[in-house]
Length: 49
Image (cartoon, rainbow, N blue to C red; front, top):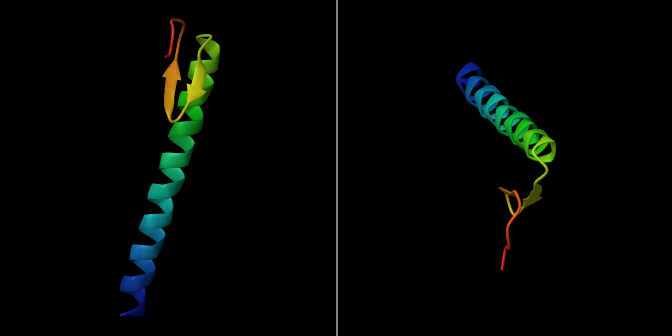
C-alpha cells in the first residue's frame, strides 16, 4: 500500500515540476518576443485596457 501512495506522490510532483518548467519556458519565449507576462498570459504590443 505504501508503494502505491509513494507512486501517486511522485507522479504528482513530476506533473507539478513539468507545469513549472513549461511556464518558465513560456515566460522566456514571451520576453524574447518583446511581450510582458501578466496574470499567466503574454501581452505583445497593443493596449491592454
